[in-house]
Image 1: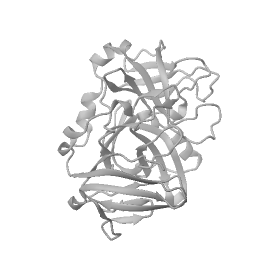
Image 2 (image 1 turned 180 degrees about the vertical axis):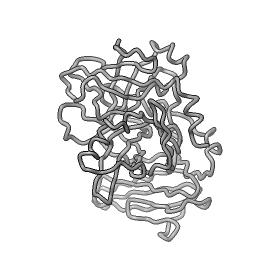
Image 3 (image 1 turned 60 degrees about the horizontal axis):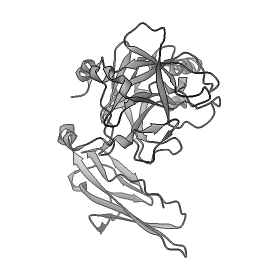
Image 4 (image 1 turned 90 degrees about the vertical axis):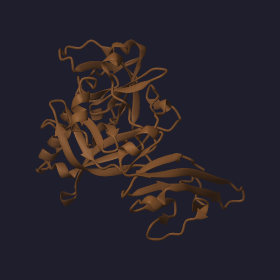
Length: 346
């Protein structure tokens, strides 16, 4: 049986919520309970076999939930998983109770430690009227449950999205951007993925703030804090990792999966103080970032702290090839905190 449930969820009043209780066995029965009593499928809570779904969350949904998995084979196996729903209306009601877990973000070269992973953001484009979709053309950094930060390069006229729309003779419309926020590792799609359309976009020359309505935060997946100038001065004390969604090698047809790659700073010919350059640690044949990773997060990790250091913006090579050491331009985050605070949702 697989147990991948979080112990605590903070869910916004009036939103929807769902969770899955998955088993690796085919012949498994599932019993759902709330506060020790069996949940009856009704208009307030839907039980759809492996999924529990709440269409509109209200105060009555506060409580402890559980799912019990039991196999029907000759070898009996029974497992119960518990989690708690805390309903809130305003962010400040729960912000002081959510604590970061460093293990959420620790990675090694191309892989992730076995722990609860953090929320990751991918940005897609869907035009249902023209049967056009472009999945994960960009990534982003979750600032809070209403706000995502990414690079303006994702929406430039030379971006892969705009070029693809031009080839299809379609017009770009902001309303057709869809954000997906979920928990991923390199091999498994998130069981907790949520999607949301864009409410508003705020641009500056290098960054974009995307305002949306995401559905919940987890107590174990608080968004990373942004780098400060003091953090930048202590850079030699940190290891650098980056998240991405582009392929690891030359095969661009392989499935999109989250990857963590270790990076190192290198000298580059960019004079702007807003940029740094990185490349992969280790041999040229090791995993590296690729153009499909635009908007991914570069983060710094030490024994006692972790923070979002920058966002992946540009690439020296316009293609992904493990035989060539890719150089990545990183937009620093430490200089835009005031702009972010000014433009975030209240």
